Length: 362
Image (cartoon, rainbow, N blue to C red; front, top):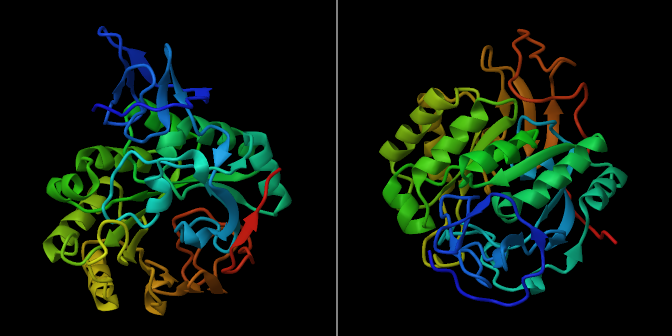
């Protein structure tokens, strides 16, 4: 990796790097392991060398803050109906040709980072807005892990929960610390072949699978998302293999969200995902043994319902991000057969609904 040079390297000292024998600094956050000379930035553009240190140039800076429904992350089994303060920075360590947030992830200018906030200010704003959680999202929190971890600590001190929305392309040491600071995570599993990952994201499948297996073995609640792209990762055999791996390595109770693609970034000519394709993918996932499979980015009421895995009783019914029905006992069990619903649930659901509200932190 030979990053480009740049100016304006002001930022907080980063973690997870070491000095090489040839005088370069190697970033140890993700599998790219960018090797930097003074004044160079890594592939993500936000981790940069400044003299004898690596700095995170986006620490304390954000593209903006919003209060969202937790279902939008998407998380279906993590305190349904509650609100979450969401924010991101800029940059990404993958180069997805189909990126749906490319204006942030592919940003090469600090102009997108007009908002500033300390971790304590973020926690205070979330608390004042009545949020139950803080989410690190929009771009990948792996590239601003130091900021996310500090903000997560402040959120926990304020009695709030934390959520990471990520592609999971991260090395073991920062992986353990980042997800150890999170109460829940949604990880994108973008496909299930190395060829697909390399050609369309510039990353490697194995590293993402290692992250999913790691998080699945911890106390952090895990859900997965796969953006189903026509002609690229919607092959029946590939979907079946992916779902079988999830069952074997992460467990049958991990919720899987199958989301519809819409043309974006470097794939403007690829057609939108047909709802029928999502329904077929959902059937494949269920046949593979996954118990909780949802469809997203389309209006598909049957793919938004949570049913008891034992007796098929309707537990949670949704219309987009709006809860229509919530029928769990205070311990998160099915009222019909007393089977626990895997996830994290309160005695009562939240009442935030489907709205998104912008927040200004000063």
